[in-house]
Length: 442
Image: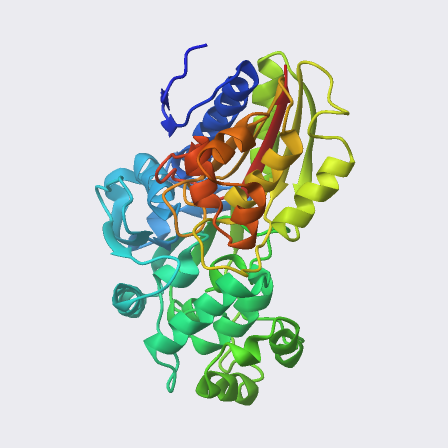
């Protein structure tokens, strides 16, 4: 069977499918990514007609505004801004988008600042200064369209007094290694920032603001997406319980802990502006289901994934979804986000870790393939979005000295998949809607 290195289309996916099931799985993933790009979602849900800008149930007469400002931050923010530029064009007076380093896209009416992810650095602080300066220039007769997606937490930052950049970096590293949910850690780090937890709502208090967001958070909690820059945190958040539950006391500097204990609720809280979702994990799952159906597959799902990556795989395996309970020409879909508690110092991400565990479950099967990957193109601190495994993946890795057990114990799934020739790479996708698992039996 031919083994295409690159599956072409509007979205490029680089992988090595080694069976018909793998080829189908990869094609569902590629076509799904095309459907959930930020520009495509904006263009399908925002429109301009006779000077009226329509966003869901909101209508804006553009003649009522002195300026239209487009701003944003996150992995999908450039693509979202592209969608707004295609609709508004030269009506945009000023724009500032903060994007992850390495994005390939450009904008005509908005300035782009590249910043670091997943650990903030000086570029993140510069992006924070520029965004706050933009906010200070806005006036009551301006209309601000803010494009928000996951990744904004690290990309744009302005720490409160007494918190340094190294402190913020430590908080992010603690999240990545603790197994804590994004909601739990955002409750902590939001209180250390002038931008998070409603900080931008205070900064953009003068103009009319509408926040368009792509959700990488199950449940679409607007206080969690991008650490809620336009939403104050919950007043009942128990920071002490979060610190204890995820052993953050041992991971955070004393000055950070002191600041968290001292600050129980943010001051100068303001009302959150209207937020409108243009995409989430469930939408991605339904796009994948439609695509798989058009390919002649019977589809089960999409279900929701959560919890530790390996534990999730074991739960699904017990239900027979990796083969025993799948019929020929059937597809099982799941969307959401797992977590990984680090025990080793290897390289990988939650999708690759899950796919590594799945490779063990598939050993010996000849008609099933599973793709487990992110929608944003980057799984953990790697250049892969995830992995595509089949019944021979573990054997191929074994031949090069790798076992599933070795990879999982060291959290080194990337090198396992590298040996198994099962990595999937897309580069930046212009989306960020959690992860997706696609199982196909032929």
